[in-house]
Length: 191
Image (cartoon, rainbow, N blue to C red; front, top):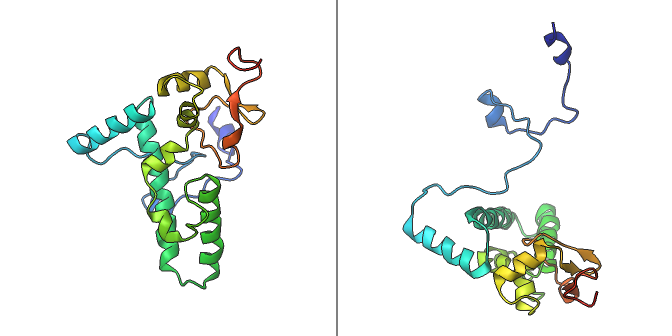
């Protein structure tokens, strides 16, 4: 007797699912996208070694943090690649291309002089890792080690501007870089 009531419930704005998914009869009801992608082959020695090197160098928690950056990078590069196939004068390429480049420059991934889509394809994992709050805190000398930096951020000792930020993977914008400091409430700072 309880089943007749629930059948009328519907998502207000169901997420769009691809035509291929609908054709297979699978409809996705999740309201969020993927943030990372597992590697196709789980045990490639080269990849495992390079991932461990990145984890050690930037003080990451697990492999998923590496995969997340790689996935974001892949999406950015795919966007750039599809825009490069369009005609240079096309409206879509001009608008979306400019937006993409603006975003990359604001995050400090590209220099002002590199305002071309070709440079977006040259982005590397290391470039994104260098922009993380964790790396910045260590490089600015607020922490003794990269691992200490992560702990300080998680324990809410670090602020960016006026805002305390406790997310080690926060990508620091160019204009926020100068404002990374100890929080006012932190015993390490002037507080």
